[in-house]
Image (cartoon, rainbow, N blue to C red):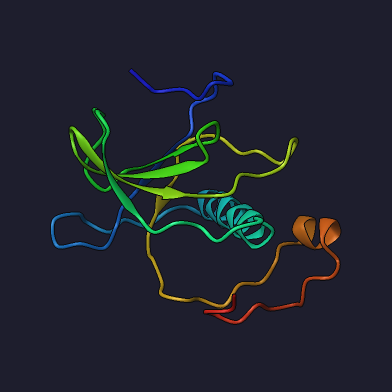
Length: 139
């Protein structure tokens, strides 16, 4: 059974994290664009958040999802990295403003430490003050 947010929308991001026990898979071009948009929206929200995000927190979280899966709860403003059937690591996250939400399932094929980020056109439209490229590790 899929979990749903308070709004009734499923928000599952099945992440394939680069670990020894989880295979990396490739995603198609459409899925890649969706993942980039979701990541961009989270970055913009985090950049405009009034306070810095707290460090990760280990929590009890019952789920039938595979370890390595990521669940984003818009209502709780948290991202859960599933560790096992009863545990997860929770991170505080910003969520998109009304009308910019995304929902669905996506696979992430790679992760990077402090990558550069280029705002997509729709983000630039809403935030023209953003530079063309935001260097990795910028705060």
